[in-house]
Length: 344
Image 1 (cartoon, rainbow, N blue to C red):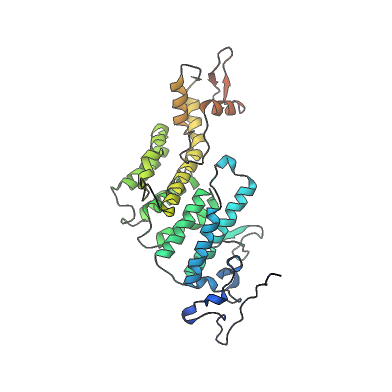
Image 2: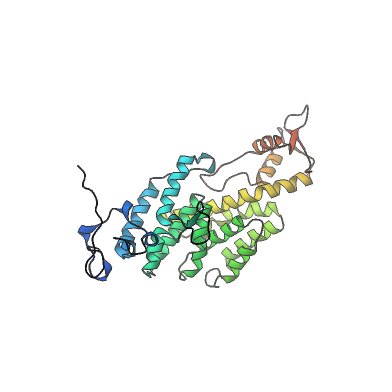
């Protein structure tokens, strides 16, 4: 028979038993990671409600999360089943725990994202060190890789409050996310960029030039320039450790996360580019001997994913799919020739 877990009782001082001086738990009084309560749900009053304020427990809890992350192999957008997305959300919940909250004026069926189960414990303990930074950046990277816009919206606003050690990659991810989340508006992106201290993305730096050029190409509908700027060759070198034959796990996650948010922005901008192309051209020739047309369409519409686990599409697949929406139609008698149906 398995031994049941019982919450620890409190001492006369009001502190949970099993804690040593300074709030640290004794090694023989560990709570199973799955059963550790969040600070917000317990308000620090329930038994073991302040467990995640303990630095050692925070360290162990992060390792617990990372082991669960390692069990998930990244999949492309098209391969994400409901079961897979649930598994990803379960991992992200360990960083950022959803909780129903009606006191904020939200409907009972709406979900309010708390600052995060682990991040919440860190904030409550006033911890400010390299571990704090690692937790915030790791949760950011995982949310980007898993394409969780809700989690990104929860994490990204908190990055500027951290110290100057926040990586360039993390700031670029947050800025690309703002471009995607607010597309086509760029007010929030520009506000966030202007508020960043110069030490984060110095004016004249390659990273700042890149992100401002990306935003400019979107504003001016320069889809060819946008395709070039969002190709991995244009931004992969901003990731620390890029080119290292044995990159750290965090560097690998940073690279995948930046690729993921760029891929998301490319998908978001695709429909606008398609509308422009439809008003600018009468037909396209994609038959044998016109490979350049196919290549050009695939580049303009950024149909090739920049993420190793993203979804690729050929020009023919795109045209065939949009023929169902009466955007184009095949020309009679000529295979590979497409007539453009103008927007009404």
